[in-house]
Length: 226
Image 1 (cartoon, rainbow, N blue to C red):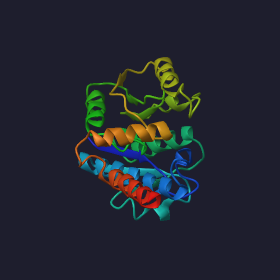
Image 2: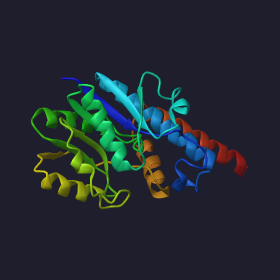
Image 3: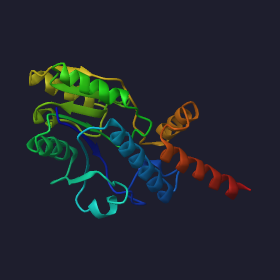
Image 4: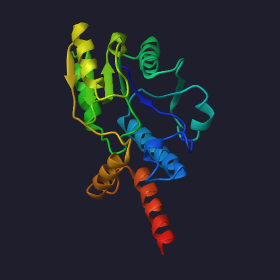
């Protein structure tokens, strides 16, 4: 079976990336931290050893992402908005002949391989849709074996209703759904605090790029305070 993992990402640009983390971070630090998120997510993707790894990104971001996304197929989304980005990503990969396609976000740097492998196993067992909910009501993972693109319609994106509405859409389409482990996105200051606590209690090889940037930010702050 040809498997594809798609990562949703964008170019890290100060003042445009992770703005909800400003403050407590500066715009430059927020962009650098997101670049680390993306590197850790792509490293995870490579560790799977699947037949294809892609990064879907907004129009115009390709040149700025090439150095970060070495060895990854860059796929430019054809339109604006999450519905079109996600639908087009799945449509593109199924047209290429991929048979199991899983998409993850780039805002969960401490995510491990287990939920992705669980989603793959669910699809192989016959699930039409595999989905991983986030603690804020969205989802960080969605996978399918055929392009059931209707699951992206009529969704209030960027709200706590996304996961529930997606399940409702799947039920309306009579799809067999399997949910995998809940995880968390890092969007705002509370999420950043959770990330720092998470990293403090995990092995040092978890999210090494993210860990390095956070340690550098903390060291810079300590130096400024002296």
